[in-house]
Length: 90
Image 1: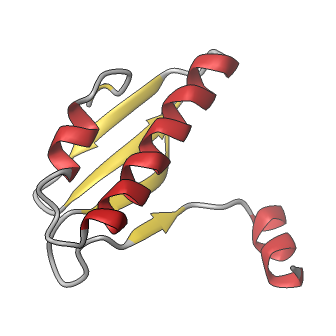
Image 2: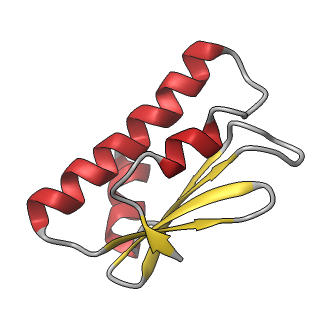
């Protein structure tokens, strides 16, 4: 893991084989995570896998952005049970 406060996650995601507007949405998610971590004082780290970029706040992975594999451009979010219930109800 490495600090995720620089542009490395964006540089890695730039090679994702999706349309440019899709890449921009991936970049926006990374930037939002970076801004939120900075504002809250969370320790934001990045993990760079063969097919993904994962963001980890205070030792908890919360998002995985796929840059390869079966579904490049897909995003996985980890939500606690309360958030899952709220999402289902929305």
